Length: 336
Image 1 (tube, one colour):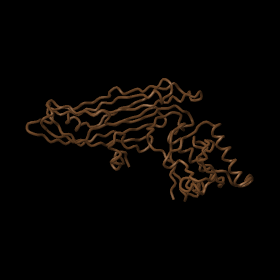
Image 2 (cartoon, rainbow, N blue to C red):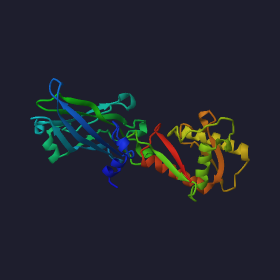
Image 3 (cartoon, rainbow, N blue to C red):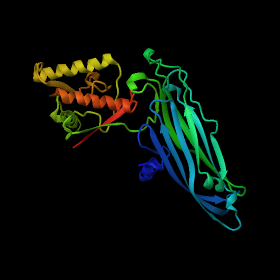
Image 4 (cartoon, rainbow, N blue to C red):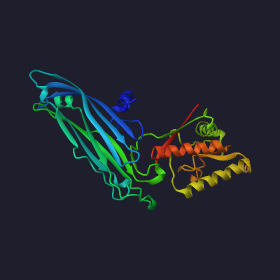
């Protein structure tokens, strides 16, 4: 299904300022407008204008680039008296912002040569679409030194309507699109890329999947029935469903999580070496919410080795397919 068709089916989200985020690489806004056009004094109605604003966003895994297809469509008018709607104009104006506090040193976004379009209604009807491409320059791989060249930015779209006889209408931030460029290296899969970071990322596992049914059941119990999990205490709540987990990259901190989890497994089940069992932990060792965090909001369980390792591969695929970097949030969804 193409993005426009899917977007139209998510009407409530699509008409918001942020729009509907299909995933970390596709976004869409379809926002309907119904404007009453008044004279220069604002005392009389001289017409009415209906139209839809569309913005399709495409970020790229493998390129520090994001494209937008912007349009004004489905224009309808109603005039009063001798007012001439052929002289009415609609404009779209884009601007960028870089959030330095959330970026690595020297962040930059390169905007397209044309960032504003103002046209008569008839021109929009004839040529409703126009394209914009934003990029971010990089200095080659520097992630080994800790510089992932992250650039946190926002693309803003302002809308305005005008005519010779009317009071001008304008809307600042008719659409906002948060973006992030990075050159994080292999931890992100493809070494560089761009994402819409507000998109929800989920790891989906099924309790009916024979490859990971034990892993999925363990996570389900941790989220829905924590009283069945170890360590056990009253009021235990484990994040991942309503509250997100956050990826952890630091291998030493990951090892600390694993060491604490394995110690707990041995305290409960004794020495399991020489068996086909492994100590499965949730939240995962590769999250900031892992067992070494110190709040005991975690669970361990002995499960089949093959199942545990396949669950780990699914988790890593989710990280790389979505360019999940250190500190990025994600959620768990366990199906029956």
